[in-house]
Amino acid sequence: MQIMMKNLQRSDRNIVLKISAIYALFSCLWIYFSDTTLAFFVSDPAMITRISVYKGVLFVVVTSILIHQLISRYLLESIQLKKTIHSKEQLFNQLSEGMIDAYASVDLTGRILQFNEVFRAMLGYDVEELYSRSYIDITPEKWHSLEFKIIEEQVLPRGYSEIFEKEYRRKDGTVLPVELRIQLIRDEEGNPFVMWAIVRDITERKEAEEAIRLNEARLESQLRISHYDETKTIEEFLDYALAEALALTVSRVGYIYFYDESTRKFTLSSWSNDIMDIGTHVEKQTISELDKTGIWGETVRQKRPIVVNDFQAVHPLKKGYPEGHAPLYRFLTIPVIMQDRIVAVVGVANKPTDYNDTDVRQLTLMMDTVWKTTESKLSKEELNRKNIELEHFVYAVSHDLRSPLVTFKTFLGYLAHDMAAADNKNIAKDMEFMHSAANRMEALLNELLDLSRIGRSVNPHEEVTFRELASEAFDAEAGHIVSMKVTVLISDADLVLYGDRRRLLQIWQNLLDNAVKYMGDQAAPHIEIGVEYQNGETVFFVCDNGIGIAPEYHEKVFGMFEQMDRTSGGVGMGLTMVKRIVELYGGRIRVESRGGKQGSCFRFTLPKAVLKG
Image (cartoon, rainbow, N blue to C red; front, side, top):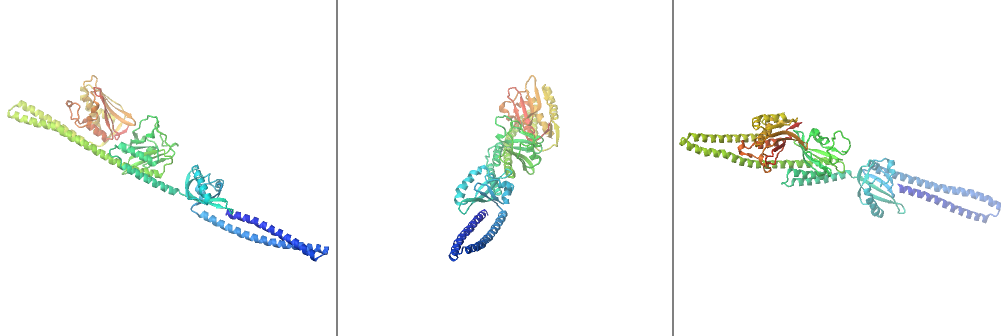
């Protein structure tokens, strides 16, 4: 349209020049021929004067008619041309406004000359704001050199560009991916005049491409996870899975926590190395209670993913993070749900751009695979552990039950010989040895039966305080404690547990019995029963100043039928039973001792049993 208007203006100038030229030529010819003719036929000056007047009037009339005809013709042509231009302009506007894509034209300086509503709405500017800008103003700087190169090497030499991709910056600052082809318009002299382009918003295509890329990345990640080294531990596997999750979401830091719905507690499984600032020595908080968590616990409370793309902003659910923790800017956490039960939570943070629904979906799908693999590995590890225990059990039982049987067989032979000789004194001794062997076998079988029942709920669960359990254990062992003149100190910790009271009591009773049994000849025998808190965990302990346990026996003492001193009584199942009960409540137990009559300290946790304190 602009070229047509420019041509129309040029035509106007040509008409004016044409009329002026015709008028000048006609005037000169008229004057010359009329004066020559008149002088040839008329010699009277007075007549010549009168005729000249008539001639001048006639000239004015003729030239007026001629000019009128020329101007009328021009005006008619001009009106027709303007109608044509207006009609084409209306058609162009209708076409441009009816387009699905955006349209815009600019001059050679880049100033925006024309655009349709799609282009304006795409960028979010007002009409006046766009007219006051150039395409450079609305293009991120990283695209400037590329676009200049395309104009210089493609548009100016050949009049158009290949289709290429770039970005526009909207009024609100967000970036919009587009594709376009630039066309060049030249004037009648062939000089570059205007550039225009059809612009297409490719946001959906880019999102689809990104979704495909993420799906491929997730599938590749899941493939790597599914083929991860079977010999690695659960901790190593989850560290690897967390690294894959960080790569998938382009995040800097992250963590994986196991979650127990019965105790409402988190147990840290894995966290990224960058989660603590470089140079700090803050220890991991391995156990966290749901009620004491801030915004990251909302994924459990609400049972859905939580996304915070401005973590530095004030939020009512934020409770801060430990000293030395890396600052968080963007944060995403999801629950891992299996059979409508939350089994773990995963958190990632500090992605360079905002987390979105795609991140949530991809992380959720990935962690479903991770957890299924985790459960499989846990099952295999548990099966291996049980097989090893079974082997030890078979060996221990066959060994320890063989001894009473050997006693029976030996003294049955003695008994037959003594009865034949009517040796009543030896018969009595034979019967005593056989009775003792039978008692030991009965004790072994009872202990084995009791051990086999651990894990099966035979008693209703109830609330019981730490003080009650420690006091009951003391009462049960009081006779032995008093006879050995042992001083026992029990902490006054206000702690409530929930579980099978009898099983929980067995922990303290067996540990207390073990401490008294191996006290030795200490001048001032002493036992302390208490509670302490380490890295967010509640840790129970039973410590003594007895004979101690050499380091090489620290693991062995929890095995079946293992006894430091065979003359101390019992069948060597007490610590095995304690370990089983502790593990039943999701805990772990260890012994600390250097041997050499320097005492022992058993420390253990019961995360599934501890309610409050």
